[in-house]
Length: 236
Image (cartoon, rainbow, N blue to C red; front, side, top):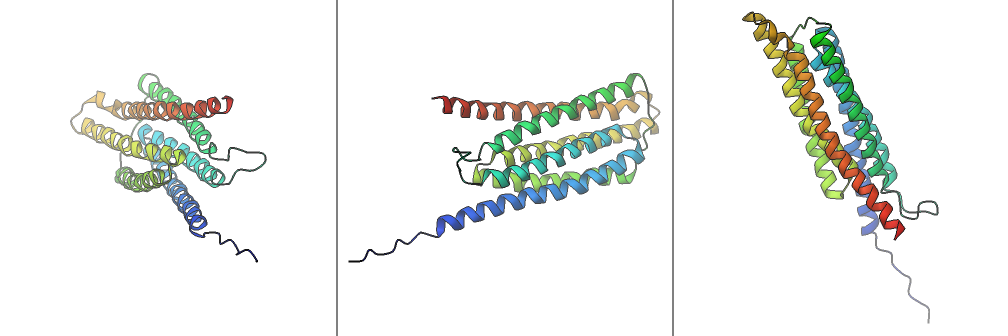
């Protein structure tokens, strides 16, 4: 009697394909948004001379690089195990998040150095403009949108790389708000002739560095724990 053919269920393959497509789409959208936000911040930061906006532009530039790394990692991590990677490719997301931590720390060091230089050694004239506030508020809106999208996909598919990106963009909202407040204080200082308020912009930049440091510490702790657990598992 001839054996009946085995029917392979299509639902599992369809679900895997949907997961890959959704993770890649949200990561790609994050890259596209980061490109435009970084360009706008660089232009406005240079024209206004605001260290706060320039630091935000540097932060966004590293966010862009991190988003590209995340896009690459989610494309690789979904590949099945093979002869060279018997445990699969999932840990590439942990390594991606670890690289993002290093990028964030480099941004923090540069911002603090530039802020101290401006406060004590070389004072710069800040020209807050409507464009400066527009780019900051638009950036906050975009960061809120992509943070929610990334967080939703990270929770849905337990993706640490997407979660790392979501955490960065969520904190970007607060750092942009502080930079906007710093520009407002600069304007208030000029109007009411309060000279020390001219330092509000580099002080806001230092706050941004503090936010970056906080994000880096959380992200670094999570990724190191994940990578060490993986090493410990393989040794047992």
